[in-house]
Image (cartoon, rainbow, N blue to C red; front, side, top):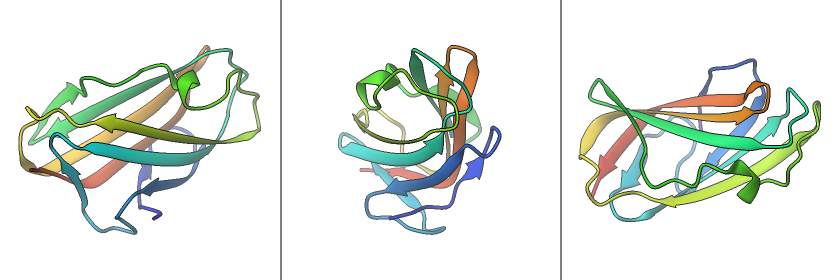
Length: 129
């Protein structure tokens, strides 16, 4: 289902979907379970490579999310062509050691050869068992 996110680049993100959530409903992230995120975005550059960067701000402390595959080309066909729309679907296992929190902000960036390709911030996330 489509979710509300804030764009943190230049409006390249067209739509973000998370299983089991839509609109401004809180996004429940379960420790030790897979989490799937899908996004439609317009490439703002020609790039041969793309990297995924995911950060979580948990109760005011920003951390890199561990255990992710940072090679976006494993999830979307590279090279990317400026102006074309792409669909990326990414699943990762949330670490069991992730701290529980009712106040999580998740920032996901796609980074190409020439800087940020797309960026989205989800502000209504919670980490639970």
